[in-house]
Length: 479
Image (cartoon, rainbow, N blue to C red; front, side, top):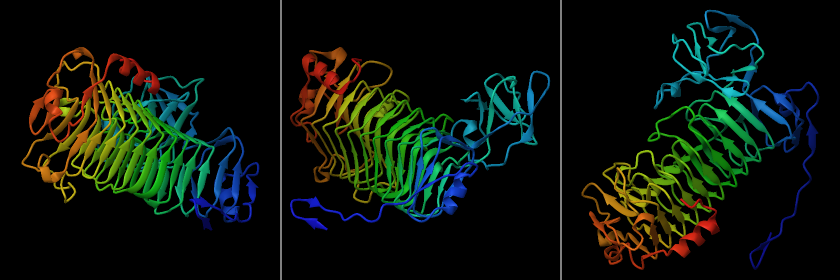
């Protein structure tokens, strides 16, 4: 029950019983034998299985509990500079190629824990690579003698089969899941909590949601996803917070299709906060296609090859108090190297962010796209952001702040109510100058000119002392 002053008092129910996985049991056997609502405690050990959670419960991994989708292969036949496996790889299916050829292949091989790169059937691999022959035997160039060779044999680690499940405390590796699916797969079920796990080396996503609500992804280390760290379609009323999501897109998926740290589509009322999203070979945080009422706040987003934060063909975002640096240097023409991008979206507020050392600063785009929200690119407000650019020279024009349109749209119409105010700027190689690095209504502007536009009120340059303080306060490198 609730009493005034915003305080809530909860009457707790019975304490959930804890059931301990017994020696020799698989995790799936433990789930099958558990009572609804129980805590299934899984002791330290390596569990090579795929599990489906078919009832509400907590799956609690004790320190050292690990699920892997691979098996150890120890039988090999030496040939002329190659080694061929006795066993054959299960057919886990294939994907349409989106980018590098290996995006279509779900097979995985690890040599002493390090992933090998797959090459096409009929190709002779070199060191660090593997191939399949026509019968699906694995071919190695590296001598497996004295080494541990693990070959992925399963698509998933954990699959949802019930609502209200918690998965916590595990390490999970090696999953041959499809490109737009995840090693942890929550599809059509609500109330899932995934917390304090270490997840890596999935072909597609490490974590995937489809038509799910009331879910939480909290305080995980999520890395080396083949395509994404976390992905979702129609995820609602959920939280992604406190995670580190890093080094994803190892398979080389097309960054204009789907790749990077986090990507959500068709989702609403999701808060993405307090995460560190870094070193992904694509975008850091990306909401694309019909997202609404999204909050992206308090994240540290850095060293991603494309945008730090991208909000595309969607509505109603608050993007606030993020620290975004060193993003966007892969494909930075016409503002596409921005640390924060609002693309064909509306009703977005972008405020109190620090954007430093990216290829561009903050950019709003309006293009002729049929999937743009019906109202158009309207009611976007950029205010109280600090944008630091190291150097505005180079092969591409640098937009410190840009409002860009390449068709006869309404981005610049007064009725569209696009606006900005109180933003502060630093351009390292232009201190003491006022360069044409700001764009509105199809023209380049100095800051003095930009300040007279509807999006530049109260703009100012930062002093060197202010820059030093911003970098120190936010633990950002000095360049």
